[in-house]
Length: 334
Image (cartoon, rainbow, N blue to C red; front, side, top):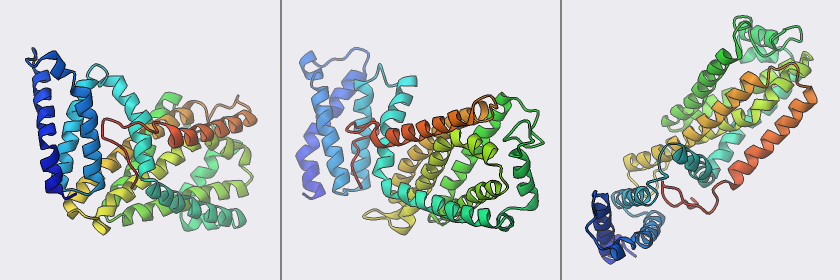
């Protein structure tokens, strides 16, 4: 069906929906109760029209207009719940995982860009202790060796931050890790090239450090420390990379839209991914500040906790919010 025919067919329904919302927005609605009770049915119909408009690649103007109506309808229907904590819960449980699954190709590409260089260079640095100096300066390597030296009474902390409290380290970890996520995302505006380069470099750096410290025999300090917060932190990093790839996609392949319109759509979707990644990174920072450096927790318990966190992460991203549309509109596959 062409867009003009689509609009002519459903225009009256949309006008009825607008009229009803305008009336309900008033302090004292004037329309009869029977007419007001039609809102849920009109809202469901509108959501279906919105999904069709997206699926058929109608004009961005029409899609945006329908999206705006969906948002107004959702706020009217769920006004008592659509604020504060409830909106955050809905975002984390429905919007974010659905958005990530919708862009699963970007996620798997980001995963390959990070983990393949990390694995390859980690093995290289394990076999040759000098390889790490090809991607990191001497001072940074020395700092890493100090942080995870078994003789360091506060494993995971540099000499400059040795006296910092766990609370101060929490703030540092949040700031540092969110900044890394944001850089991976923001460089996507360079046609995704910047995101690709920094992700590959991050893979080389993190994998190289792991291989180098393992080669030195620091396995009982390094791996127990990073294993607890790694599931959330590393997954958030790849999600931020996926957001950057999505942001840069319209410059290479705008699809049926003008590049500027495609970029606006991509920006909205990728920001949702970035926000979800930032929340996961923040959760990882809590673990890194209070759990990872605790010397009284047995190594076996830390590894067991890591396995549990990986399981939780996979189940959450795989299953959360399936079959539910969020206030951002129906979710459908690419």
